[in-house]
Image (tube, rainbow, N blue to C red; front, side):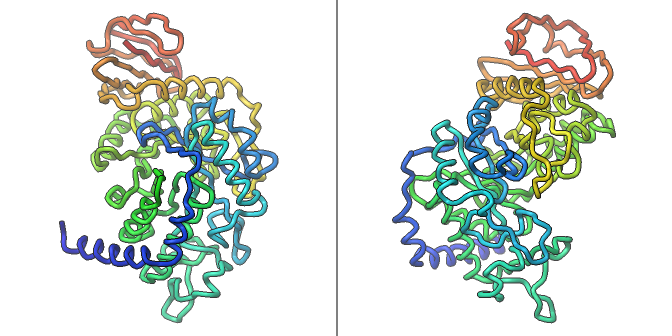
Length: 450
């Protein structure tokens, strides 16, 4: 181990010991009661669903999520990620939920702590985990920390608090991670939600902007909470996220590849497999990449139907992304083909009656995904083709082959001899005989097993 890493870990350990002796730590652990004894599924079995509360329901609150838990269960979701639920700052703000005014309060627009507790309790009853979005890099300009502890923030040469350098995030103030008390306050705030709302972990925003040694300190403290198994997802792609305790981080490179392949650029399908291999080369055993075709940032710019050319193009991109490798994520409304950008301020509410055919397709796809250990855990083999994604997942007891036409036009494909023979369609159970060549119509896909 390099000396620099040893110093970082030693610093983190000292801070952790200090934290362990604090009054707030003792109170927190004595109050922790995971009364329903719920534990999330293993990381490799997660199907995650991101919820923008402002867009998810006409009520635009936590109750609106509770009202649709059965729908999420029917979709195949076992983990929901709530975009920030905290009060939003007013100073220099444009309304982004990532402009956090108070870390340990629920935005009154969304409800209160009891509403969140009810959501978690009811979700757990359906075997669905609930994780919160955590914004550790910055706060709003009217967060109470600025008034009470200005030394917790980054200052310029003139002594003024600044926004995160190298960004255009002018609505937020940058936190100074050289300040040990601020670190402890941040960790206490994270633990508050685990202990008081029984939540199951965090999606950590802008994780690449926050130092390695803080994440080590934070994950160590969070994982020390008794009787809790937490999901920890880093929004970023630094390799050291896995070393400090995150089970997952973002597959940004794969997102770029799938957009280029199925979208307007029409690049070679080979780039998908290259991206997949490169990303997973840096992932330790037991860890995962989060894979998606859209999320709140992407959908705030353009909908999947726009990015991938059509409803069928969006579905084709999802089939590749869900079944190739990694943990799949859906963004709310993706399954019903939301065509308008779902903005932070909630000016667009999802029409759940739109595109029922897409909803049925996503239910079918995820239904097979969650019941097949082969597609989640099998060994991946890819086959070369410029326009059609062809790959196989294999375990000792089963093979699943996936063929996806990534183009809007019909493609004729020559198949490797190892793929030829009789298979079963996973959705109809009909026998499909693959010969030396197969023809797929625009964006058509086949998922077969034997």
